Length: 126
Length: 424
Image (cartoon, rainbow over all chains, first blue to last red; front, side, top):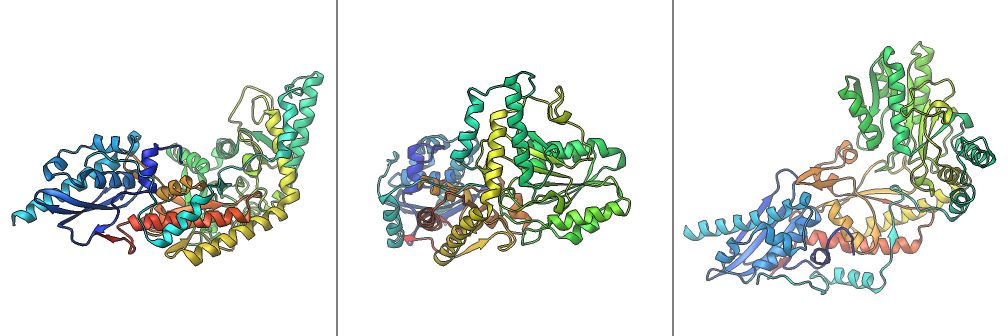
């Protein structure tokens, strides 16, 4: 295993959780870090206010991939309300910690989740 | 559920990837394909240097027998290093490495020649140790021309000819590039400089950073016509911490380290005798075994590239594939990012490097790959594989399998890739 990251981080890279896209997603959101170009796409299937299924795709440095994997795993099965309360620090902790220069990867994960939730709420209200 | 769990399962991808994973997980090897970053110490080199770390510990400046023993060893090493590049022994100054050699060459020349002009010509793909000094002197008011390299990664002599001005005092163009391995037209540049001098441009000097090329390309400073040439020990199977600068007889430069008479007043500081002995031995071996090493690494590199080309779509080779060092391959993998690929390979025991870095949310794509005109995606996805004299066919086989798996895994995850899965 690589020495620069934790075992849990390396495991997310080697065995990404919930990778891919949902054919029957209710909402898909993709956010890009405008400075470094990292991208994260989340597709969610939502049933009765609960995230029934979550999948992710990511392009960028390893922390972006690991945070995508972690957030997709963490939100699957939670209510929208619970998912809204998820924080950047919880994502960082879920991947076993990140050096300060790589914390933007966790921010991108949270921003993408929030974008998906807002998009779903607006589409739901239409 | 909000608590993730570590999974020991195989990755959730297609059967072809799982096959590659199974193949990898059977036997985990360590495969070092980063010989352009550094090389392991050759056992013969280690054997030669060890006495100078123990019983032969004298200071080469001391008059007594301990000192003279060390002095003789340094002198021998100087002849060995000089011989590698066709120089005279007294034209070689030992330094702490290639970076110091490049700093000494550029700053040293600029300080003594500034009365004759403040214009320097370099290339867009120099090593950071040249690029950094040039950027610094630019801030101090010097004018800099950075020659483009086009899509093959090679400077054009016509561009250089057009860039030379009456106040140009230094041309610094590397012998071969460290990221893509392209050989630069050094002999033509040397001939142009000689021609310029014959036409009265007396203060024009030519420096070349040969850190990557030495031991891999036959170098003769007389034939090249260069005035200064930088070398590093740890790229040729000697320890880190030693380098050298060839300074042609008659070329004046201002020392950058003062306070001692060592190296004929050109570089103060007690010589690192053991490291210098190692450098000398490594230089002698590199000269003697150059053809054999090059044949070996070229065969492995070419086989690696053929396998990669056959098995992995959407790749772009960076740099001219003929005019390049024999041990190096630089490939951009579309839809994925180099650092992710590097870590995936590292997790499988394969060591490579990438010139791009993402830090604090800011992307620093490799200036070398960007100079080829590649877009940001290709610049981010560029990986350097560099083979060594002890690399094996088994290393190539293992690296190709690991690479296939890493690329496929990352492409499955990439929103840029056509191969992204649709899952339920």
